[in-house]
Amino acid sequence: MTKPIQAIRGMNDLLPEAAERWRRIEQRVIAVLDAYGYREIRLPIVEMTELYARSIGIATDIVEKEMYSFNDRNGDSLTLRPEGTAGCVRAGIENGLLHNQIQRLWYCGPMFRHERPQKGRYRQFHQIGVEAFGMAGPELDAELILMSARLWRALGVSDLELQINTLGTPHSRTEYRQHLVAYFESKRAQLDEDSVRRLGTNPLRILDSKNPALRELIQQAPNLLDHLDDDSRTHFARLRQLLDGAGLRYIVNPRLVRGLDYYSRSVFEWVSPRLGAQATVCAGGRYDGLVEQLGGKATPAAGFAIGLERLVEICAAHDGVSPNASVQVYVAMLGEPAERMGMQLAERLRDRGLRVVCNSDGGALKNQMKRADRSGAIFAVVLGDDECRSGQVSVKSLRADEPQQQVAQERLAEHLSRRLNIAHT
Ligand code: HAM
Image (cartoon, rainbow, N blue to C red; front, side):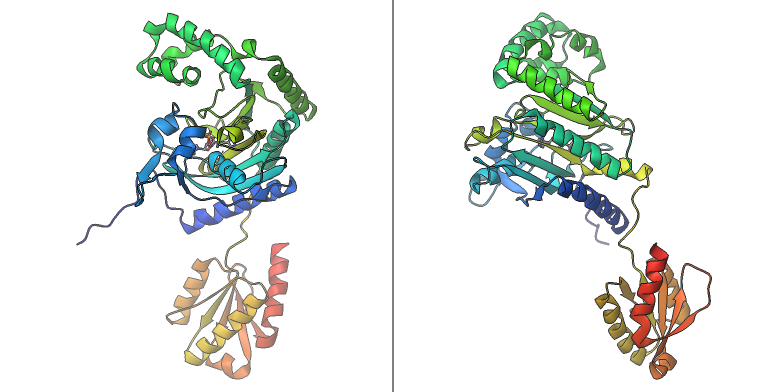
């Protein structure tokens, strides 16, 4: 027997039931993004490798060891996108969307990172991301955070914790970096191998270390908030005022540094107490320098991305989301004339917006009714030779114990629409 080929580790199939659930959640998220005036942009999944090196940063985990990069037939180094911000900025510059303009954009799709797979961490995962361009003030940072808070409300998720921090400007961060390096150099003997390496490449990331042995050391490290430039300090204070004014609860986490280099000033994460080690459902911040860094004219910008696998996982517990895509009507057909007539009838029902499945490959009525039940339909329509002759069909409720009804074929669409509306209110 030939050995079946399996999916790649960390890359999951979404089977129909899960896919339906995802779609419902995505639709709710998109409805909220619409309410804030964000518009969809669809971007390529593959970009030049250099785009990520220049934006996310060469000393980050993503660029150092997690990218799916390959040479294409022309010898260009290409990469499966590990995130959406860089591609969105690239597209914005290339299509003239950014300079002296305000843009509010969103995208949705798969991202790829070669991380060690575990619950909540995959090699192909999905994000809904938003990016806003052309607004420098903290009102935009607040808008993004309020919009994400509204998303959780729309999905019935109530226990996420908001953490915020400011990373200052690149200039103030360089100065802080010197203090941090001096501090960790003096404690070098206590650092783990990863942190010693980061000391030379990306010392801020040591603050993000998950090693419990370093907790104490990190607690006592110099605090970025003490080294902020005045503008960043004012920006952060104003953001806090806006969040307080909106009645949003948050904690200031000075160790929140994010794993991508492009951030400046405000950063934030929404963390779930129910997700274990991979607890961040949504993360983002301001990245005022990135557009210029990628060759565009200086443009302030900020955004965030939601990890859909993690969002779906926490929505599962709250069932605020109701099904809306399941089959409504199953057409059972006995004999060749009934099959012909049944398919035409089903088309007419679909013209009226009903979701209809026709039986295929024949079978006894009993078997067809079993399939009807398994399809999830609410009504079965039964057609046999008698019905073909009489111009009637039998309508049977599959979910309620009530007598079968005879309905004239030309009235069937109206009859079912009425009954389904009743069933849905
Ligand atoms: P990120 O923090 O790398 O930021 O990813 C955002 C979210 O994607 C995470 O909080 C998590 O929910 C999800 N995620 C990341 N990696 C994985 C994985 N391996 N498996 C499952 N879920 C994952 C960004 O990607 C930025 N582009 C966000 C942003 C947009 N900042 C500004 N604009």
